[in-house]
Image 1 (cartoon, rainbow, N blue to C red):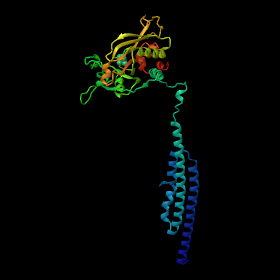
Image 2 (image 1 turned 120 degrees about the vertical axis):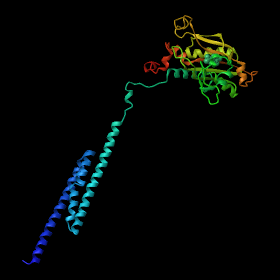
Image 3 (image 1 turned 90 degrees about the horizontal axis):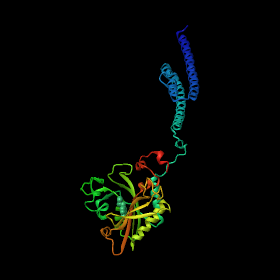
Length: 367
Ligand code: DAH
């Protein structure tokens, strides 16, 4: 047999082998793609998906193996197998990417659903928040005085010595001015700035405004260096009243105390004024109401007196009017003040004023 023929036969055998091999490779790729597609379709977890990705697309995958075998192919064949290989890889990669998006979206949805906090759940018992007892009474007082034509004035909780004491005719030696009785703030220039000890400084701001007549109340928080006990709190609430107009006299004060107390405590309530002393009023009085518990009969709450002390009042001292340049020849006025927290504990017969600030839901929910 001529050598050339032998060569030729060999060559054709080789060609036949190669064709077979390529066919096998292509068939392998086709079934791999079909198998991969359904595997990617079925997978339900991200972790399992990533395992499938390395199985089908990683270096040690069948695709990786085919790629390695490419070196043994002729350039022509290498090209066609290469194209097929790339197409297979692209198809599988696309399928895996798509599946990954779906699984990630599902995982996010699951997580959002798990994280949902049903805030309506806490209210199965029908619990709703409401205003604190002190705020309720404060609003009630505001309504009463708004009904009488008063304005509600906003004061400052931080005041200077002038507004809290001096302009109110409080003596330089008055004990309230000492560090033991008031909360002073550290100031750079050493000026006397403190947390207001009463709501009376609002009187001074109203007078300074120079607009008359004045019919105003100022409810708000006040501060004193008291240790909390059943009858005292270092932070509490007062309401101040100020009326300045032409021809205002003691009878106007008397009538206002009577009408407003009856509006708060009921029309059967009686009021009385007793002589008292406050630096900012002259004459000054303390005012009492008939005991809310025994209605004046005498009980433990009122110490058998039938009366309970509520606040202070009087005609505005001429020095107070003068300190704010009010024309005292034309205007006169009255003022009053009392504690809102005290009123709350009296009205509801609360034994200890500290209950108001303990935030015990069992206490608060009763009002
Ligand atoms: N500021 C007084 C206090 O804290 C209460 C008071 C008394 C206010 C008499 C007044 C008043 O306006 O006329 O004890």
